[in-house]
Image (cartoon, one colour):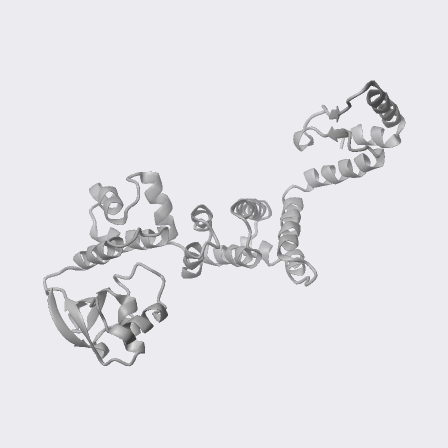
Length: 318
């Protein structure tokens, strides 16, 4: 490398060949550079059109540009340096002071892969980017590179987890963004996000629809437009709607059971549960007591239950 003073106008700041991070805001560096100057010069590579490509120091260059600098001291790679050399240097520069996050690893995989032979691709990528040398892990991280930038930023900002982002990568960009925007609006937990993804996916298959059409349905938009509902209430109602739409018979059976159970007027000492998914005939009745007197009271409740028409309706086949 050679130290040179380069005109900022000669640097192509839009060339993100070696950029791993999605973060572009230079504000955190402005005060430091304004006070003490540029301590750590960026690393550049000159392209065939004589413009300079940033290898390391994107935010440093942007900060100097924002401060109105016309030239900058930089370290320029030798002419024989390849794009692969630049990518490796950019990755190692980042890893010298921190662990790469999963989005940066995904971007690194995407940028490095065209330059690597298939036979040792996993070994080189895992060693350079810092993830386990496991084909399943590689496949998951690589899936993120197919996601739109908004979702990748959502992973970085912890709006969606790594696992849920992998789920979203299986959708089209339009469908994935529709799900992501819902998660961003409702700030759902990882498990609730997974539940919605599964329900929407299964409804789309069963009804031959696009996931975005389900998410833009009148029922969901009506729930989202209700100002009296807080975020948790909206999330609960949307999940309940999707569950009803995905499992209409099960939902109907649950509603019927709940109605008749309420009519039995059981107290807190007696609990009745239906067979799982209403796919059997065995109901369970549990009661608690701590004395003979309590037991006699439960027996009377049982006699009343047996005479209650709601009990007969509850046990009738759905």
